[in-house]
Length: 421
Ligand code: SF4
Image 1: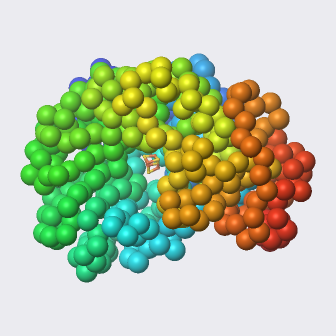
Image 2: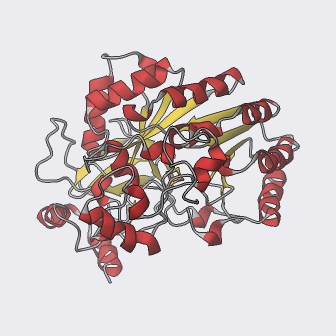
């Protein structure tokens, strides 16, 4: 940018051009200063996390941040803090074992009749709690066209696959030519009934939802889009206009929220978010328990908190404004309600997956949890599947483990010991 260029503000003549927004993304503390007053912790983290997880923010999303409040729910989703580099409960970066379920590069075949096709590692913004931190933003996971073709060939050879989720990264970072190439090849496969997009573009860069994109999508119906609003502040007029363009093109839009500590983990925020989504004709679909991924402990919540929020929504708002609260596991998604959740065993929550497998989710309770909901205390069965936890964890986590370690089977404690190095 030369000195004569207009400043990057909402008054810029190209503000609503999605390509301009992508080219002018913020990726330094100096650029962030135009939007907020970064704290010393944020400045240090921007520098030190650069080797761990990429960092970018679109000017559009930066304009939603509170300039002076580091606890701003928008800011905490996207600005790194040093918590990301502190001790976490786990070192795990692939908690769903997606790598183990990938028959071709970036193609995850976990459920029999559907696949998640991570067509790119690029995102407009890198959310600090991202499920796919292991790959998103990493050059090794960008795909060449022959790699895309290999994944499409796998889908064509497996006639049990009826549902293809295009995800990433964010598939809508692709231009229309690349999307047309992908959609044309997938639609040529008779057994692919449904194509879904998982995209955060309506949230972080709604100008990407152009008329050209909508024209393209409606040529390949049935196309569904699931987006990812986490907080009512994200529901701007521009976001609503983007959703409206998708709806005009006949695209059903659902929303997947991630439950995040201090961002949306209270009934009032969740009710306001989901009621606003419904007003925009977006169906709240899932509320996700944040995955245990190393470096995200400061954003995760106890499962009891999510179950309490769900209890507070039922009966107090329209039924279709209530998402299903779920945890993703290597054995599929588990609805987090008392039909599936068996109880708490120290730092784990024991649950049963759809096929009857028992799963122990590492999820320590802080000493000061302020929600009234309590799970029954249970013992973990020997050999139950889980993610190994470290002996040394962050504040509150170590205490939870040591005081309740007696309920953890020896086999698990041994695995935890192996992972602690
Ligand atoms: S938009 Fe989705 S894939 Fe991209 S960083 Fe955020 S959570 Fe991860």
